[in-house]
Image (cartoon, rainbow, N blue to C red; front, side, top):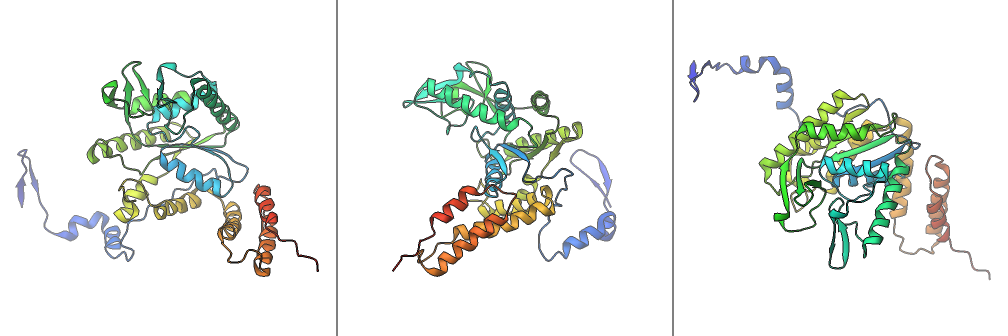
Length: 359
């Protein structure tokens, strides 16, 4: 059969389905009879693994906070989103470079609102009651980041959007508009070349041993609409591919693909239809564990899981003999895990031990 499309081009149409799918038939047949009714993402395997001696820094979109909090929960040496949530790659890279150089703030980006001082270069969570205190707060954060970046093993960067806002007054890209009038900003889309150039500059200041793990945030941005959101994400994904090909110490983690393809269901989004549910975050976290941790590290984490479950346990009678024995077992378990810093938890558990009353 010959068909003509709207452009006038003619093509042969084969009505034999077996012939149409024959090049990939085994895979298609396998998926047609897939009892799980999903298309799982193949977990990436990385040569360099995270362990309890690794220094880690996580920065970027909300997703970097989610994974950072999980790493904190398991007591890895991590600094997570020290500058608050950041969405665009330029601001993420700029904040890291500023910390490494302990650069001074751009005073033209500092604003005062309702007796609180903020900066267009940082998230709204970072605020002070005076300009002087704000400067001091950023200086302290920069020093904290700089110390973590010294001899850094893993840098986890989550890009959220390639849409950026330029402050008309300075013609500079900002991290947050802080609800100022839209007329004060110009929105535009970053190019892959801009992101690569910014990343190149950041990389030149990082320790040679640092492994950079890039990921595109699965969190959707409705501000410009879903069509534009997909355009934005595609630029980020393409740019991460360029950098992965360019540098041997740069890898990509498919959190975006796991969320949008494998989970692909609105039940995995919170009520705002934007952010992943706790269940979705745990699902992606499982991929992180299988990809980035070796068996010995995972074994330690499994032991710590028992500690976490014990800490979350709420006793009916804290003074009961059963609970007191439980606390002692928890202390013994904590003391047996040498790889994790847990002195604070052991002290807290010991404080719950009730001294028997003498008769």
